[in-house]
Image (cartoon, rainbow, N blue to C red; front, side, top):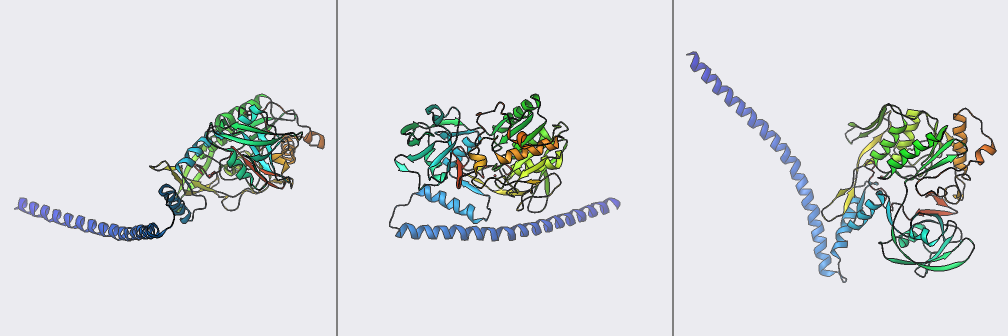
Length: 451
C-alpha cells in the first residue's frame, strides 16, 4: 500500500512540475514574443521605407547612382540619426587610414601648417625622414599654392587634405622660404612617422613631456621620456596635453599607472548605472612634483590623464578649462566590407567616481594662450608663455622661487622622437592649425574613448 502511495505521489509531483515548467515557459515565451514583434515591425518599417525610397529614385532620377557611395552615405546617416555626437562611421578607405594614424604612420609630404594673416599656409613643423624634410622645407616657410591653385581660399584642413595622399603619388607645391625666395617643387608622397610624445629638459632640471595623443606608439616613448628625465635629475615633471584630443584608453591608463600610486583609475558607467572598473595602478610610482598643462582642446583620455594625476599624485593643472568629453567609445567595429563604426558605450568616471563630461576640468592656475595662438604653433617651448608659467608652478612646488629670468631662460636638452618640440597642433595667428599627421577622423577609436 505504501508503495502504491509513493508511486501516486511521484506521478502527482511530476505532473505539477511539468505544469509549472510549461507555465513558466509560456510566460517567458510570451514576453519574448511581445518584445520581438515590435522590434520586427520597426525593422520592417525601416527597411520598407528605404526600399520604397530606393525604388522611386531609381525609377525617376536623371543621374547615375553609385551604389558604393550610396551605401556609405546611408551608413553615415544611420550613425548620425542615433544622436550620438561622438559616434563615427568610416568607409573602408577611411578606416585603413585611421589605423595608419593610430600606428603613428601617415602618407603625405610631412608638414603641419596653420593659416595666418597672409592667407598662406605657414609651416609650423617638418617631420623627420619625410619628403618635406628631405627637400629642405623649413618651419616658418609658406606653402602658397598646391598643384597650381592658390591656398588663400582654403582652410588649413583643406590644405592638409591636398597634401596627403597615397604613397608614390605626386603633388606640386609652391614654397616660399623664410627668406622670401619662391620655388615650385614636385614631391612624391610617402609614409612617415609622426611622434605622439616629445620631451626635453627645461632649465637645468625640470622635465617637459609633450603628449600629442594616446596611440599605439605612445607608451614606449612615454616610458622612455619619464625614465630619461629622471636619470637626468629632473626635480619636477611638466606634462603638456594642450590640444590632445585623447586616444586609446588602455594606453592612457598604462601611462597614468607609471606615475601614480596604487589606486583605481577609471570606471565605465553604462546606461543602467552599472559601474565597471576599467583600469587601476600598482604601488610603483614617480615621486616628483607634477604639473599638467591643459586647454579647451584637451579631451577624453587626455582629461583622464590630467584628472588622475591631480587626484592621485597631487599634480596641479595649469592653463584653461578642458573640453569635457567624458564618454567612452567602443573599439571600431569592422564590418564585412572593410568599413567600421564607433559608438559611445558608457560614461567615463575617474578615480573618485565623478565625471567631467560636459563640464571639463577647471585648472588650479589659469593662464590663457596668446591671442594670436603663437604660444603653441610659432614659438619654441622656451618662448611659450603657458609652458613658462607651468615651469614656474613646478619650481614653486619643488620649494623654489621663480623669477622672470629663471622662467624665460630654460635651457633646452635632448628632444625625443622627431626632436623638434617647437610646434604643436593648435591654433595660429588669427586662425586654425592642422597637422598633416593629425587624425582627421579623430574620434577614432578611443577604446575609451577610445575618441
